[in-house]
Amino acid sequence: MLLAFEAQKVIELRLVRLAWGGREGRDEAVSMVTEKFAAAREATETLMGFGSIDTVVARYREHVAVNVRRLRAA
Image (cartoon, rainbow, N blue to C red; front, side, top):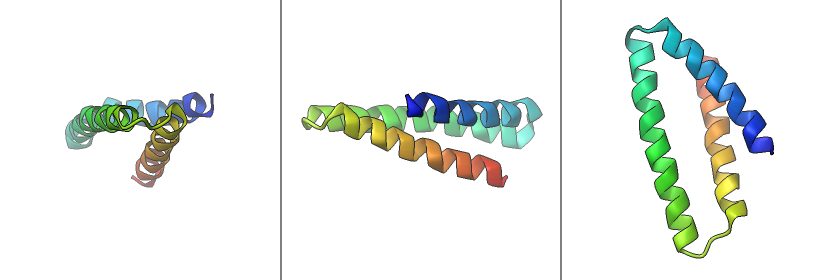
């Protein structure tokens, strides 16, 4: 449940960045898609290696925290 709340902040910050448009908006769109594929691959590898869903959620929360810090800093 925490992941859902934390992800909302990233969505908010990304929407603002995308709405600004320009190079920053375009770069954010590319970053967003790239990160989604990388996170999905990482989750798949974890689960295929018999990792737990808790491990996957914990990693997603780490990725979300990194994005919040990055988007707030800009």
